[in-house]
Image (cartoon, rainbow, N blue to C red; front, top):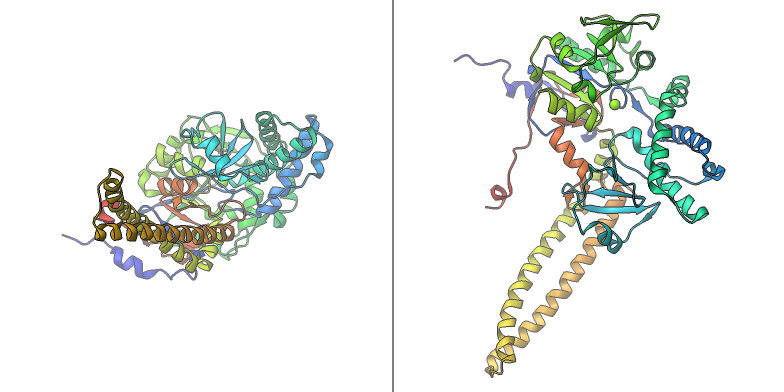
Amino acid sequence: MQLQLPLPELAQLTGTAPPTPSHRIFCNRSLRLDQIEWIGFDMDYTLAIYHQQEMDRLSIEATISKLLDRGYPEALRFMPYRTNFPIRGLLVDRELGNVLKMDRYKYVKRAYHGMRELTREERRRIYDTHRLEPASDRFHWVDTLYALPEVTLFAAAVDHLEQVAGTCDYDALFSDVRECIDRSHQDGSILDRILADLPRYVSRDPHLGETLHQLRSAGKKLFVLTNSRAAYTDRMMRYLLDDAHPQYKSWRGYFDLVITAARKPSFFTDEAPFQEVREDGALVATTKLERGPIYAGGHLALLQQALQTTPDRVLYVGDHIFGDVLRAKKQTAWRTMMIVQEMESELEAHAALRHSLARLDALEELRFRLIDELRFLQRDYKALQKRRDAGATLSPAEEAERVRRRRAIDRLKARIRVTEREHDHLELGVDHRFHPYWGSLFKAGPETSSFGHQVEVYAGLYTARVSNLLWYSPMHYFQSPRDRMPHELHP
Ligand SMILES: [Mg+2]
């Protein structure tokens, strides 16, 4: 039998090792990069990394202006808000005005009303009596960085309106915030300001040109598939890539196909026609896709046909679980890589907390062991106690044993309490280091968070930024850690 070259083991050796954890690409599902013929990229928050705080402030200002037009009190303009409050993966409870973080089983692990954290008891009373149905109209799932200012604004306005008016229609408020922010995106209140001052809002990755060039040099073809419109895409891509590499005068040189205004996720399911965007902005219907023009609209089947390869040889890189990664996975056999720009701070916290995290694990294990031990002691103690209660006379040795066990139980209970206190105290500090309000993006207590779970299930690969591909050979063999089920770990 002839060996298939390059050998995966060799491919592994050719890449330069990533310099730091934040440059690493993580793998949920094994992927051989040498088998990939096309790599597609989303633009916003994927190729273009936005400065989150600046974007948040811009979106919030634009949205508040529109809320005032709808009759909200002028004072909203001066209310305090915290752009560092939300993270991705939160759920807005439109009925009660709360913001929730869930674990992978959809149990609420943290909750805020306005900017006040609900106590464990409040949380349990409201949410633990039934399993949440995040897909219902009552809840709104926050899964893009675009949507974070909605949460910031909603939480701040809940506090403000309750304080000023004493009441708040949470559902109406959330609808208004959503609509006003959408309108701000559509009418240019946000996009025009971004284009007018790109360096303020967008971080230009100095390695992006080299990264794309390295992939092209290895024979990969590249495409852009973005929801942004052609004119905005062109301005943004010029800023990101024009003059980024001596071999490419214009950003267009890197890409074999450019599709704008794609309306993902419906791009993956509906059958909209493709249009060619002429230089003067005019749109002309077309069914043929080729290198050169910029296209608008379209749908998956036609694009797949133009790629002239099988779907499993396409890798799509995007930042949006639902619009990019989940649909690509469900509707096609495209492989996926998710850009999670929060990885950088997440990994930093992880490294800084290494010892605390190990201690937390140890304390959790200790607690389990102590509880186990307690159960044994209690069982033996109860047997003696039961006989005593039934009127039997215990021998002196048995009585001594009964008393000894009673004391051991008390000591054990005290030890469990001490362990739990240390654990809770440490966990609070750990969570706070990850994020002051919500803890780690990927975890909810000892469980994976609901966001982390989605990344695990839908993203084949995930990493902080596109240019991390530069540290890997274009033939790299990404290997997922071998999956083990609980019965394999602890037989
Ligand atoms: Mg995007």
